[in-house]
Image 1 (cartoon, rainbow, N blue to C red):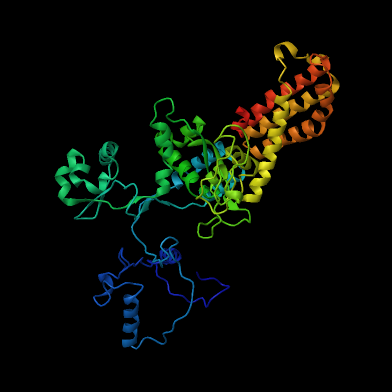
Image 2 (cartoon, rainbow, N blue to C red; image 1 turned 60 degrees about the horizontal axis):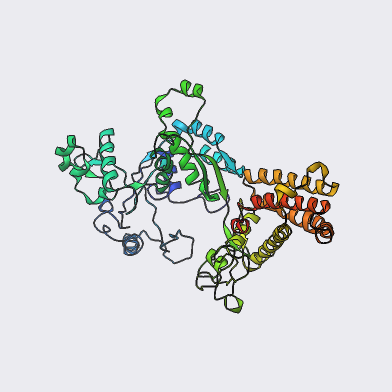
Length: 507
């Protein structure tokens, strides 16, 4: 648009064909003239010569011809310039000012901020992002001109163009939708969609063709998931919403706005009564935002580029893997801890089949709040870590074959100092991991588990314990003291690993 830094400052303004132009026209009282129909053709408003011609092809050529005939065309030449194209169809777009349905946010904006403050945002920066978006939000356009979606249940009088939407009409349409689905709006005779008291007016009424903005639709999911499932859940927030970082503008925001706007409290109480109640309706208690998965070079995945990583291929293996897709030994249970035999297809990179636990460990090893990388080399690194974890667990269980905790356990007071130290490190790690998991910081939690198993156990304690385990007699108190510590570790570690590595924990 016009700026003081670029261009001549002289530009045509068409309030009916562009958002900036529309705002300028509204400011200076210019009409939003938009003589283009739904098919991109000129309407009768511009005269018979142009009516029915495509704006982007023969209509454009006809305009040039008319200017030439009138002696009003100074120059015509082709030049390259930026123009908006639809990302899906790859075709040029036409902007038009059309009649739409709007929901005013001003009436409940403050209440929405209360809801945002009451929700836990993970990571915390999500609260800042959504707050700034709601703060600068204008009226919400909730209608779309699509051939699919949930229809807006409005009727129009043919004689006057007046919109007809009442509690009675909405209630009847709701009943019909519940019985037959929303597609009935397009297929049923209009008499069926009208309440009995209005069916005599059917000749003068036509159904609306607009559909709901998909964000208004999906943003109301709290009503279908919770309010429709009995009194126990009605009005209660969902425990958690989980989506990508782009949803602060989409689903997260629409969920907060629809929940607050539709709440009985907002509709029935005065401002003073609401401020006294101290409660605000929430769609959920916690919002967790994740980034996007990129390839190991940090590039967006694309089928055409061939850099897509198929999760099933990581788990089960692929014929593209070296050696024809042999499975990697990760456990004893096929399809669970152990990788598959390689079924081919899927992604284009080729993996030997690491099993589900390795893929889960990768997820728990990255910072999900930002974009994350995945590829053969990265998964191989995770697998090496998984193998170290598994080998340590095997050492623990392998040295407890003759240990009965009910008979052989040694009291804490009788343990040597090194054993007490090891138990102290275990207790400290358990508290730290539990805290990290509660905060959904799986990366930090698994890092603590790995540190415990590698630095405390493998690198020090187990190395010093081998003499007691292998040299001392079975019932020697020093051996039993060591086994007491190993048993405590096995009991704790299996529980710490279970949320992330369930198959290894089960094994």
